Length: 193
Image (cartoon, rainbow, N blue to C red; front, side):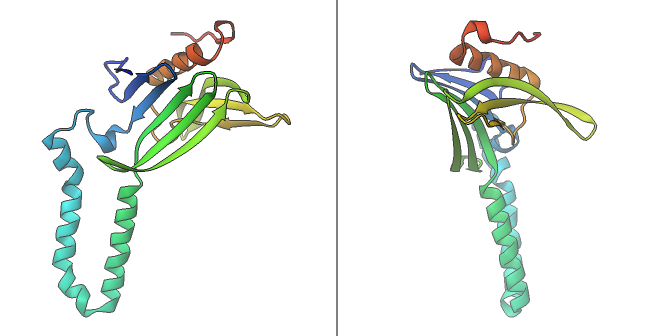
């Protein structure tokens, strides 16, 4: 397996290649920190958790006496833990040569992935892999889109990296990689570099 960061200015993109598959992984740097884990990154990730535990310890004597406070504190703790455990760590487009694409989203704690969701798109239903643009408020955002067509003619669009929304140079690198590995050179759409 070969690993590389093709864009030095964009450390969030990691490309992994093997004979059977290739993966384009975009890290959520707001959650994971830098790609190399240091003591500073660990303290940054779990500093908030330590403050929450300290707050619970300070509020515990009050909550034990009053049931309303106990229920409120339990609700706050459950909401915090659920939010902490379901953050997006990274999203991937995995190209399974001659089979299709797999879109993955990994969620969990900053250093421990807990949940993974996967969507497989067979090559037989895959029509195109494009960079599209959409409006959000007053700004234009670029995103990747996978266009599928079912045997009965229905067209669906899947959006990889829908949670992280990487910038255009990262999208362009992934676009070119997918087209090189899945589509013939004759069907690749020209994109201005």
